Image 1 (cartoon, rainbow, N blue to C red):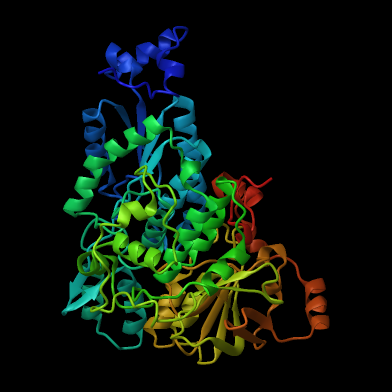
Image 2: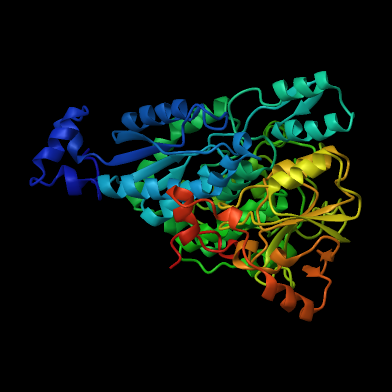
Length: 564
């Protein structure tokens, strides 16, 4: 039987007789004459050895390539970059984390467009890898699938389960004599036992589960652990599905629609996902030419119950969900049944979302990992979009309910994360304080670094329900507590957060979705007239971060770099 022609892009090179040098190079890398009419698939991983989230991705890519070859396709392994959020957290290197999302998307677009690959299988691991590859695939808009690298196994010490946030919070506990130096060291040594992304509903797992609901991952991809047999099986099967997409010419934008994106956001909110999903889905929506704004997130959150008892706000990990619940398809099936998610959206299997999950086991609630819709942890989602004189263009809060829903306190202002960390560690923060960390936005940071270190120190110091923290930076998926980020306009651009003074009263109200600096408008105008940017935060005058500050959009529109 004659093989159907599916080399719609690669034939521009392989079947073009005016490109003899190109053909010579393809022969040089091992292609045979019979290969020139086969479809070519770029197998793009974010592999590098410096991060447990990514260290195993090359081995997964090799499994995928073997599968590609067995299905009579040509596969080319390609690597793009990654930044470890956990390693760079609290250092100047963290400024490169969010900007790396754009580099990943740019590099995928560049190599696939220039080499005319017919399809793409992307294998991301860490936080910014996943939205980065998704944005790149949308720009390309050709048959594509994402294979998630998978979650890490839990660490253990003294009979307690650990993860990366255990290490961050341990420092606050040690400094407050809650644990000994020896316990502190052993927590650090045992928090991360091997490969895989951070184990709670942090940003990597948030984005992976969300994109499985969008339809860009095979069923179970987001919840099967990095070292599991299921992950190996997925790598073996993915070639079957990419070939199916090539034959049916099902492209990324056929799958990523407004309905499917809303499915992804709803699932992430149900499970208590990271606030970073707001930044990333704003950027994904732009790449997909979809009209989704901050107000849509608030509407979705108002209509979506919070049912996931998962870290950091809960107690369970993605590994627990996989072993005890049966994986993300079990939850998707339940949410379709309860009419939270739409089941008729197309996915990378060539089937609908409901068809993918209809044979999954039914959800059980005995372990209290997931709560029933009828008796949720919180009737509305934990993502709150707050407006007010501090954030007239919006800000993002992560309020699960256990912190309370309102907070009023006196401001303690810091012009960098490092100043704030020093004060927290030295026990200079008193109950009733609203910590303000500014000049850490996309331009002022630059790069909008995450504030996991200060929030972890706060939790470790026992202040989690006694103080609030607001910032024009952003938060890790590992953050919990009464926190508000993504404040826009940011301080570097003259936002109100730049003129807050120590002792000012700030009120945060997640019921009415407001954040207010309690001074008169006349005083705000007076302070604004006297304000000027802090020059020490503009030291970057060359290189990628400098370019990033010149082209990055506001956090309220997703921090994209192609919004001109």
